[in-house]
Image (cartoon, rainbow, N blue to C red):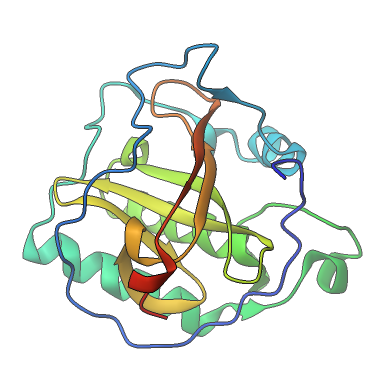
Length: 202
């Protein structure tokens, strides 16, 4: 199931809300070991060739975002603004290709483009890129989907173009497959850990 393309349409809806303190995802890695390594998507490899700085891991950066009121307001604003202003469209319909990752420079993108643009803007605002990881999940329809995981002092939070709510990972209803490593430009497995659907707020 981890070899899929993410060419799926992701709509935006719902208000932002205050965050609770969730537990971290089970696979917070100290390094990339053979047992935790995961194969990156081909489209991510292509993205990193075109946007080298976006995939660079600076290990001197903090591994977690400290959620102050100002930082939280910034995250909420960027999440809501990108969900509102970027037009959701599959790569196939937009570009004639099954899967391409970019920063939605023309204002059109699918789920991975939303999350990459959010990270780009939050990093430009001073948040540590190392603590913001592209993440592959299986959504409520059983389809491949991309979200942005923010690793914070309040737990792992998810920015998603399907909702303006910034949810703890365990309230999304998703199956978490893999994400970018904090230690190197590589990916790590999240073990297909499932967020309980009964606690999802969608």
